[in-house]
Image 1 (spheres, protein in one colour):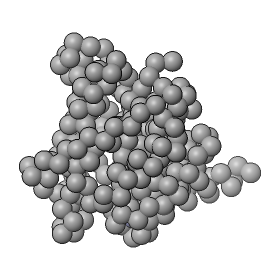
Image 2 (tube, helix red, strand yellow; image 1 turned 135 degrees about the vertical axis):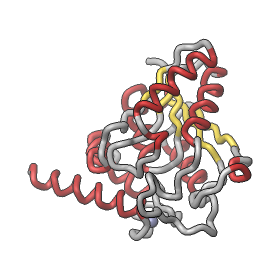
Image 3 (tube, protein in one colour; image 1 turned 180 degrees about the vertical axis):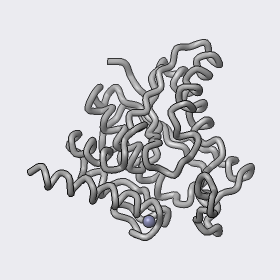
Image 4 (cartoon, rainbow, N blue to C red; image 1 turned 90 degrees about the horizontal axis):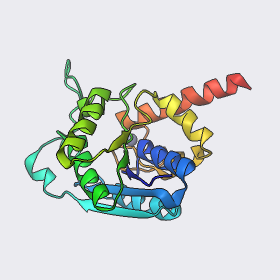
Length: 221
Ligand code: ZN
């Protein structure tokens, strides 16, 4: 099995990716990179470090992108700004311009320096906020761009691309890590790990997906 580098935030989606990579390749083949870009909650980076340690992966690198906040403005990076979605807006004001392009480029540079050409990212376009850099055409295009940029054959995996939140929980359950994902990861915009504040859009989406999955699971019994 080839080594793989997972773009890992410590949130639900990327932790499911990490667990999937570990299940498929073994922890000694799994590397992770976490970007510290001044997200609303520093706890996110700390949780990512804890999870990486607990799962005994081959390596975990935190890369500071502390200048990001200086050049873009949104409610994910600016704690004084309320999280909202303007009527008719294509996505909420939590959108961070260019984030996945920046992360994938940086991760690919780092991966290549370590002889790794496979990368995984936990983007989903099925029921998320409509961020353009979570869509499949972007991921495909970025893969082609990285190959051209570094004259290398990278493979980008986005295993959650077409999964709804309920299907993500089903995948976590199949991987035997549903409770781990539920209690150890942070998705909440208020920075509360596990089930979170229960009120913000991220918590509502996460809880609705979990409830839907548990309902269908019960029905199959
Ligand atoms: Zn919340």
